[in-house]
Length: 170
Image (cartoon, rainbow, N blue to C red; front, side, top):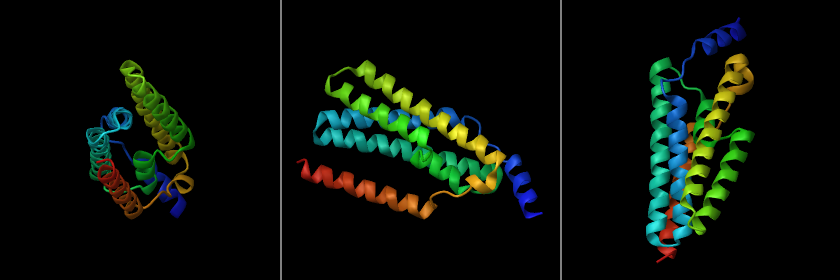
């Protein structure tokens, strides 16, 4: 009975309107800002990269909050997919696109930075979409994810690392 109740709950969950485009946009902004910031190798570059991270984290928090309001529940696996691009495909696409964007930024090929950033956003959104369909089909196997506390801790550590880069870069 518990498994059937879990399946019914999962099949009734809905993603907020515009979930995937917003996720793709947030990731694209973050990748583009990171590429610029790394290539700039200056304090302003680090500030731009941090601003990109802030935009992405804001979008992710908004999407997770909207999901919770629409459904009245939280799914930890969704948070992992959104914030960490935890799926194997999404991670490979993200890292590959970020590498292309960074190399392109060093060469001042801004059109390629934009293409790579969009590819990262679309790839991660498609990875989240794939996970969502798998979760709805088998919620027990896909519900586990990184806890919100761990995600918050990782965000704090990342911000402290960026702040240290700002201090060292002066």
